Image (tube, helix red, strand yellow):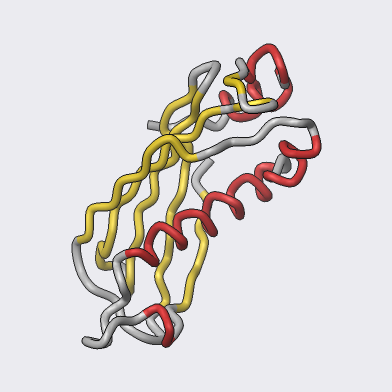
Length: 135
């Protein structure tokens, strides 16, 4: 499942040159990821209510073109990989159809500070994610 998320660049997200500060793209990725899981029907609030958290293991951004105040960034987000212990999201960000950033984030599954195999702990969630892996 590919979903689209839209983010309008805020004034405070820009640097002195008027360009969206690079650190904000990671925040936008998080917003898009939360929205994606909500649309999937099993948001982070539900995952955490089941006692499982999903911390970031790694994050990567490749900046292609700048954005500025009031620009609308369209974020295409999808799950590109899943294992029993981790999943990876891919983010394609565009402004007016032009590529501005490509990103990836990897998240593990954890319960009480310990890694957990989501296929055994929450098999319904695992199967839902598995049926939506693209890549």
